[in-house]
Image 1 (cartoon, helix red, strand yellow):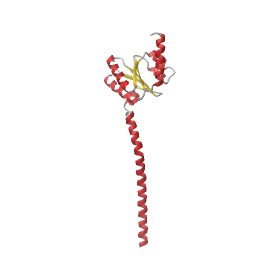
Image 2: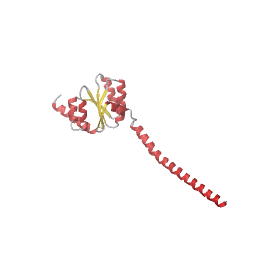
Image 3: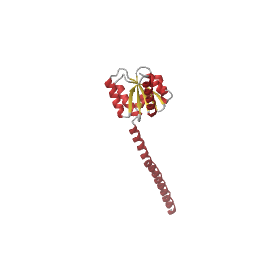
Image 4: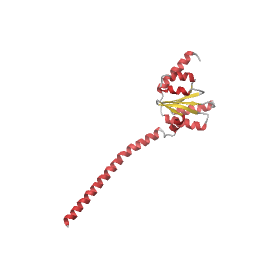
Length: 176
């Protein structure tokens, strides 16, 4: 590769690294072109992309960024998955592919600014999706006021019952 072309590739990589939400480094040796194309197509649908990049160029692009720690895993054939939105949905898709294609292995990842291992990636894949988490959160928020209202109403009704009991007891005591 020409020196100028390499500089352009590194510059494009640095720009991409500034825009991503998360990065995952995978080993893909043993996969054929059709399998790689299928993975790329699935990832494109969830705002992520898979690129095969030379380790030396990726190491240069990662230098000075939050993903610099990924450089320790740059050996052998690697593919870089760039995530622009929801890392959990990407982790679920890749986890599904790793079950189907055991040659595909996640070495490490960068979740925000935190380095994660392959085992932590599997834990990430087991989380519920963004929509499910937002739905649960919304349900919790809408349920809280009604629970609070019920608790306040219950205590108020108990107080009224107690006061009525005291009042009737005093009335019974006056009559005697």
